[in-house]
Length: 275
Image 1 (cartoon, helix red, strand yellow):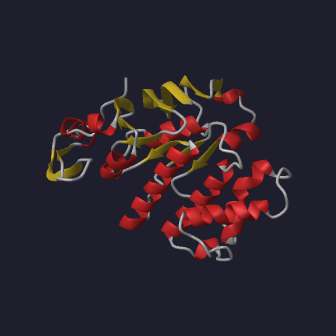
Image 2 (cartoon, rainbow, N blue to C red):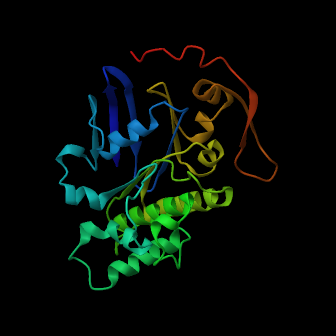
């Protein structure tokens, strides 16, 4: 389990995250949501160890993040940033194989490539092995990077907790690819036992696929719980400044969120400081 408690991050003398937290258990998909500037990426980076909190602590499987050796940490959690720009050309298969670096010298010959191809297949990029990563569309590049982090946490045995930390993995994906990607993440949580923490902007995807939703506003934790308890008209108004309706379609188990064009007055005071 990943635990991040009372996380505070200060930048240029100003708190951009304060008293925020999140827990992710093995086999669980947790969605971080909130308006732009709410602190989602900062919290994810703190959980990943890319940002050192000024307050609070992060632990993975009961061990403080700072106490993990780099090689051991790389085998239990993988991080997908929002946008990864490569400054040089590289075949797609080589990029994905980079995810297996923590296992260098521990795998039989050819196994690394087999795992890389399996992960490319999972993200819908079979046959892209020799394509130059820089010639791919933005959405294809993002899926290739996802294949890389999947390769990083791939194990021959499914034993042992592993975690994915994903910053907007659906960015640049079309509507069908978003559904396919979230369906894959749901399957990885259910069948492979991965704990997944992902930033999402599509509230209906969060409603459909997440076990829990964590709603941030202004650097604070606003609500946390099952999607139907967080993604209510009141929660959406508080977090996003939008009026919304949550409706159920006959024959469908999950409700849908319909946002209205009229915004509430949430953002009249943008200068409110975090205290």
